[in-house]
Image 1 (cartoon, helix red, strand yellow):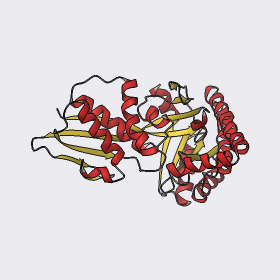
Image 2: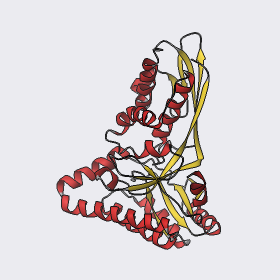
Image 3: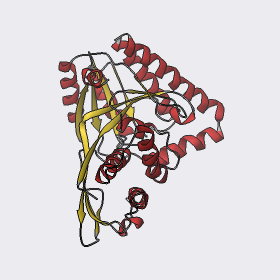
Image 4: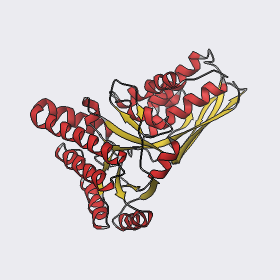
Amino acid sequence: MNSASATSFAKIILIGEHAVVYGQPAIALPVPTITLTATLTPRADGAQLIHSTYYAGTLQAAATTPFSGIATLIAQLLGHFTATTQGFDLTIQSQLPAERGMGSSAATATALVRAFFKAFNAPLDRPMLLDWVGVSERLIHGNPSGLDAATTSAEAPQWFVRGTAPAPIAFPQAGSLVIADTGVMGQTGAAVAAVAAARAKDPAVVDRELATIGAAVRQAAAGLADSDLPRLGAALDAAQRSLTTLGVSAPVLQRLIDAAHRAGALGAKLTGSGQGGCMIALAATPEDARRIEAALRVAGAATTWRHDFAESEALS
């Protein structure tokens, strides 16, 4: 093993949460200003130590912690490279808040896989990367759509339909997204299970809302292609109404969504699993985005970020 370092990005689901699990499309984008770096340094004493805000300790002890999915991925990577007794320090430096719908687990896995393959001088193509990231994502989330892995490892916004290869999608050069953290952890497993339970109880109602979200995603794609920000904002609002009906929003999210609208947002919704986590608001100009950010902080947002669509276009 050689010393190696690799990075990944946060991701934001623009639109399509929950419905993507049931075959509807979704649009997501990497946020290159919010990064995660994994650094591997070999040790001669055989100790396998992890240093991060998510977990600090030995690889073996991580098996009984919430970090166990990532620990299993590391163990399988070591086995793949016939290096199960190789000592190392693994340092994870992340700007991503955990359990906020920004893809922290997939970003961690993406950077880890890249770092291990670099450390062992092995080639790594994108399908192989996604396969490896899927190891921990399945353990952590149970039935992941694959959207997080596809986007945290991407260099451009993604159009995603489960079971098909993600495809880059063009974004306008005008407009901004304001991202706000409620300060409350999202509940990915619980939210996904709640939608599944509701669908089992009343499939007609839930399928109608899922189809409505799918239609909103297609409307959003048209708005992006035509640089029609009001149309995009209307699609975000339509998706939020359906997500609320599905029971995956929360008062803390709605408070920020309402504040964003009062500050002039063209549209606003939760992003990620919901029941906490983050929300997004669409702004027409950087000046509007700054005003919305200020309003969200006053309304109680723990942290805010801004992503200009021009950044997405530059990546694609």
